Length: 288
Image 1 (tube, helix red, strand yellow):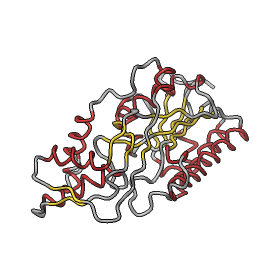
Image 2 (image 1 turned 45 degrees about the vertical axis):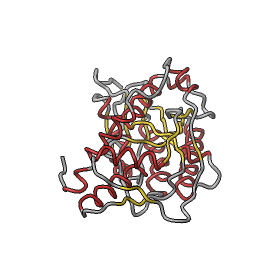
Image 3 (image 1 turned 90 degrees about the horizontal axis):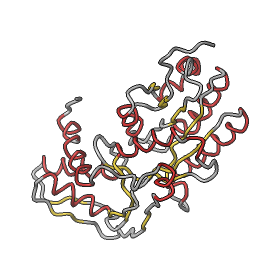
Image 4 (image 1 turned 45 degrees about the horizontal axis):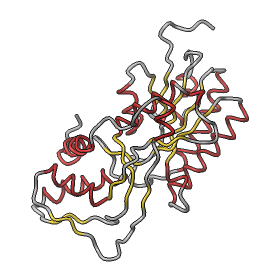
């Protein structure tokens, strides 16, 4: 088969989601495939034709932007199965990188973690069945512009906008003491692209962490957003909201692989300011 000179080396499956959109923005030559294409196996196969021999498909599809069911298994497990089947059916030389979650590594962690574990299991089985090279990374929490309400910073900034619009004086949050590792979604995209370029150097059964290595509490996120808004708002927490867990990643293995000193290039304050500015459209209805 003769390939076009511009045959894509990076294909983003789920290119309209938070991380997928950021990856496509950082790599304009990437081919974007909307996650909903998985509903049509034929359409998915068509989008996988004519890729470069060293192409990598980044599986970023999911339903995290759906507040009604952020752990919908169809968006993760079924789409993963269909992706591998489509690659095998087309004879595509593509390799696959699935974007997992650090929640997979934590005991319990709810429905989302369970679905992500199932997605990884399906990917591993399909990789072995079809002989398709596959790698997996664990993404920690993201911050930055255009986050959905199913992610804590996205939910907080929407509530803050609503409080201010209503003339309120208090912002209620839960689990304010919970500490998580936040990395700007644009930094995540940059790291994902860098990982695809070092695909063969990744250990198959030891997923790297995409993280900052810095822990910040939910309260700190809320306080930074209040500061960005310029409003005089008091942050309150209802009784019984006492999650004091701490989940912070180790960026050293990934940094060593990629030759970086840190995976974080965008200042936290810039991430917060951009999240605040971008959230205006969710209140005003501005689609731009």
